[in-house]
Amino acid sequence: MILLTTKQAVFTKNVALLLNFLCGQGYEVSLGECWRSPETAHTYAIEHKGIEHSLHCKRLAIDINLHDKDGKYLTDSKYYEVAGKYWQSLHVHNRWGGFFKSGCCKVDCSHFEMQDL
Image: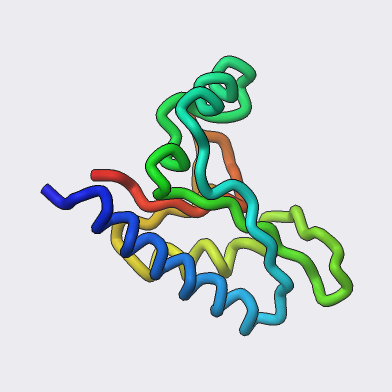
């Protein structure tokens, strides 16, 4: 069994690689939520804005916001797809929210996570 701290270290290194990649693609980047308390996760689940057992609670998920060179916030998934593919190429357990289709998870293009297996 791999320790959570080991997974978090790998996740953090992958996030650094992703941020460098995105900057190299010409995007301006800002960070969204990278840690969520269990209480907040519970509230988000009730409000249908997230799931109760979010990987944000384990520091294995981050939301990354993309902006163009003029500072315009980009929300269309087409801007995030190259990032999602790159993210998933970094580690077998990395998942991009833009590929979420059904079940408990809706499409969430700014979400990048490492599964806690």
